Image 1: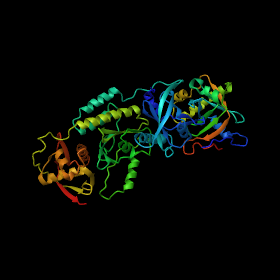
Image 2: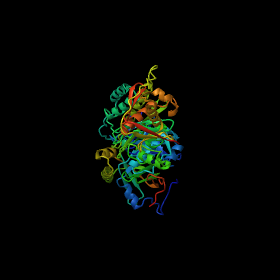
Image 3: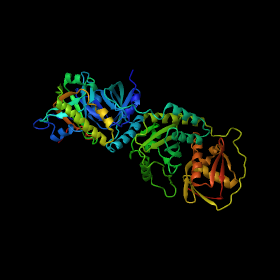
Image 4: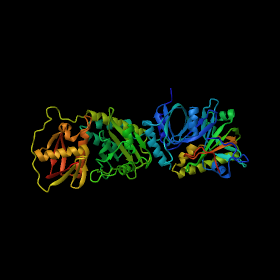
Length: 446
Length: 167
């Protein structure tokens, strides 16, 4: 029975370097620093393999090694007898260690020097606490079971996706105490994530996009694993990733518009965890802090619990009106007076401009265009999710498409950028589209 | 990566700068192995280099070691890493004739000096004095391990790590 190392996880945050002693086939001992010791499960750790070193050569020859780690709060030291099992050069463990290593490299001035070649997985065969004075035990984690219970109870009371995501950001702020956070939803067709809710930023950034693999949000989405960075790193900064992406794509004049990504300028710690509903990636929960090392293994556990609860609750939320109520009566809304609002649509990507200002694109853009046409052509203001889902003009990619998330995005972008147009939820799967000014629609063909 | 035996005509691996470095504010990590080739490792609490720079003595607290002193007695093989926390500058020495020798008053003075200097180096990169002192230890009974370095490697993190030490 291997000794559980769960209680030692704080030792594996990279705050204090660990060392490994190995021995060659010829019996020559070697000792070396390890950049990253990663907690895999109660019986295994993974060490970062960055260079073809003597350590690496030795463990391939003789798998028995000894690792010494230091608790970053108490200063207590532990000796782990370990046995090398295998190297993983891709996959979730590798991605997670790669992101964390980038943070460690940044912390220690080693950016560009540290590059992960593989995650070397070891079985832990024994753990010994090394004799010595230690400081007082660290305070208990902030995300404890009692706090989680309260958060989950509040999330369970959500009646629709919008209130579920808002509650998620609310509980992060209080009782958990994280005031800079956002939720991005996954768009399976366009292979991107778009921000639908955020807290703590000057601009909400609703509608801002991240591509899978970009920064820690994209990495968490792609590998479907939690990713944390304890120290600011340019390598995994979403800002830089997005700037480079912009440069590599080039911006198509007038059409390819981007909403600036929100973010803390002095961000030091970041965490991104996938929100999964069954095996489907729903989105990513992201939080950041100006405090280095803000997110540890315990916080990661807490985030994963919250995110999986959000995934499960969202799957239970029906977004369609009960049968028999799907066709709202055609009720001609009163035509507003005043100067017309010029709304332009580029058919190429369903991007919508209000006057000369970019508003939205993609599925949310197509929905808005349909609502506007319906307003102009037959004066309708009441709509259902079902009619949108069945409308070929909106080209929803498939049934798993999260229409409700698109409506949240559209509703919030209109609130922020175009108060003359408003989406109001009127019941499960139903909403009213308010048009407070006359509109002049203009379509730019492909 | 080849082991470097010898190194100068006088068979002396350490120049004056290296000798000063390993006796300075560096982490001293000592490793051995037993008959089953299972390694042991312990943080040392000081180092002294002989006047002719042919002999290195590292100081450890035996209470912190597992099989390390038995391993030394059984096979004399040792590897020691010296690394300055604030700069990451690191070298590794290896020896084949390690033995436990009596601790002298000068050794105890060296351990006290090492604790002060090492804790100051850690403080310069943000570690609290209490934390550094807890990790260092060095207040209990000491053991001295003496060996003749027969191989020396540059081990500062990076692709050049593992190259034979140069002056």
